[in-house]
Figure (cartoon, one colour):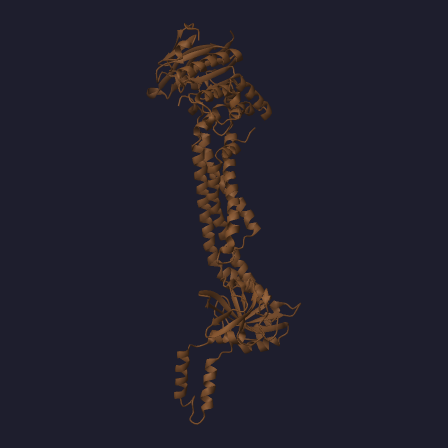
Length: 235
Length: 400
């Protein structure tokens, strides 16, 4: 499979000298297009730092990151507009859905293509198509506060997918959900990854979903170890 | 692109509108304060306009008759009438007093004016009901703000006067409505002594062999009559003939009479720049304080609304929203609040202006200035919230 994202020897150090904190000490990781990979690790292991580096919201200290064929970091940012990078190449799914409370479901999803310069009509059409694919089209006109937890998370997945980014970063996406809904979300992510050829990295502590990942990275003391090369249960 | 500010306002419209109403009432007070100031100036100009005079002749070296006491002999008007360029000249008296009417005290300015002929300076220039004073005594014309009606009888000092006519916008520089009497009646009211003083004065006259010479009681009667009446006026109002230069006529009067003469411009300066100056500064201070309070309220509200959306702003930034879009959202909300506030304030000020005891003049130009000021204040007040929003790190949306 073609490569979605690759990270090589990524280092992030906060501060310097005696007070330096080495959050990432040389992380290596790769996720193919259409693949969903788990990232686990105890608190303070560097998961959030890695996610922020991947999301281009903090700058690594050194290393290399590529999304598809595009080198985005190589001992320094290789793209000028990180905001556009996040908008066009990376999708985000959060622990809580963090939908914009004053926009209805359609516009929550359509906002990203609108930000990318598409017309309102085109953006809303793309949003509705995706909501259809995620089986929440019947709530298209609802406000986020009127949705169940599962519906909110589906809408946030639609928002992450709508600009067809090659990479999606999911931060504890099943934390607020019960087992059935959590597993349903993982199934959905797997389906969407294949359908849209997106590489999805899921950061999680959720014991319910950890067994479902074909590949799993464990991060400890700022270094990743690939714990599983294939899914025992087929996820 | 959809309007994020508009959607946010629609989403929480109840809170937004209530906040706007609260701000609007404050803006309404501010507009009313400006209206009170404009009303004071308009009252002063109405006083001058309605007096019908081109020149005010007053006691030498005084700022009378409105800003300082002034007393002239009524006969001063006669030589003035004969001067070149003078059309009419008439003495007037002004006296501010309380009059009891239907169980309430009404504060009025009693104006004494010549009534022998219509159109004499000092008479009310227009009537909205009834007729002018035609009898020498015991008739009055009142401004409608006194609350008097035609046929009402009112007591001024010891005498009763019947209201025969009503006029409007005839107020003193202090905003008190006017009550017009004949000059003689007004002089009597103004210079009248109380009964006890008259009795004592008569006793003193009777006991003086000079004022009450034996065998000639007519002398004492003449002295008593002279002491009980007055022929003084507070000012002589002068109109000039069409085409005459008021300044030149004033110079002529000054040259020949030991009086002070003011032109319209000078009298306006006395009323507006001297009498109202302190009130204007007072109102100006209030306007500044209200503007600061309004700005603080808008800043606090917009800042609170922004802080409550910090997580959403972090998400917006994370998914690629430009800083200027977020700043625009906050600015538009502040301006929206100002717009609602101004609309409510303007409506409120217009609604309650007639209930103010003094004239409140809401000028359209002041409303435009107020609108611009409100928008500018709201824009400035949003800067703090914009600064806070721009500081939000998109990383806050990830990992808590």
